[in-house]
Length: 432
Figure 1 (cartoon, helix red, strand yellow):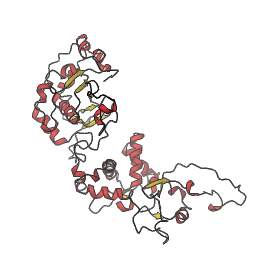
Figure 2 (cartoon, rainbow, N blue to C red):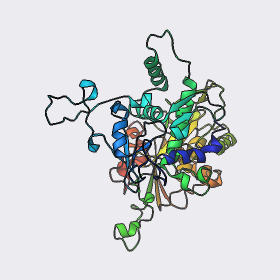
Figure 3 (cartoon, rainbow, N blue to C red):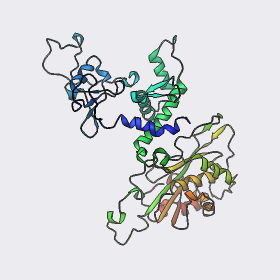
Figure 4 (tube, one colour):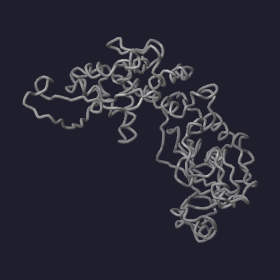
């Protein structure tokens, strides 16, 4: 992993090259026609071959399923096209030749095929190591697993074992085990795809020039994310924005199902705070400096919500859960996620919250937290000790502390009257 990190800009250059311009001198792979005619690319071919139309169809006549993702250079970019739009006809009988008794009309046939299974960077193959690689995975295979695991929640082991079964379903002559190499390549692939999609390659300094959270997707509905758009002009409010419009919302909570067992593995941090999870170095340094924190429960309910803040944790887990911060539209904020070491400690949650809202500038901040009744008491004092890079000023703006509607019913009457969204002005139907 560490050997890959210095090469990220070079790797991104190679990945972008497959989507880049049709360069001068790129001729048809099977003829010497002018480059203007060699405007078709088959990503499934070794190296992503460039063809003219005639040789493209001829080259894939015997294996049409290989030719699933066709690209056509339209003068500006590679656009998707298909065999059907190019006039290709698949003849199912007579060894691929037309049937002499067939009618004149052709029918559309939609085929599902595992092209990605059977298809070094310039050849659309991703190596497992930088030095003397002995294992590699095709781009198509990595992309297919990426889609299957995000959409279908397929585990890496299940996908890998499927590939093993495709190779030898009897189990008598299985291929050499490459599961660990595959998972490492998959992790690097996702990281590089994220960098590619957020165009950090174009930043001064490339990947090393990334600031905190630049690769995270910002909520398009939050006013604070409308870059270059004047809210005053958008709503025709010449006298300035009222506080209820110029408001940032932060929803804080923890999840104790996302545990991570301690396996004494020295992991390499790839993102380093450029997406959703905070940079580990400053985060852990701050939490350790805060030391143990024991809070007295003042909530007048049987919820015992503050108990999570006093959990001792166990040495069997490197992380007992995660703390996170979202906007009101349920999008995770940039650098708004962090591991919890010993329960829902205030130092963890303070850092995650402050890191996620460090770029906001609204006159008003609404903070929704299921233990807001307890957490807010000494929050202003704790903010003083936050690192300068994420310093949050709860005095310089109006801050409203509320409890989400889902949790408020479990609190006592004292909390319900003070922290309920139903009794606060300018909250509309926010549920927190």
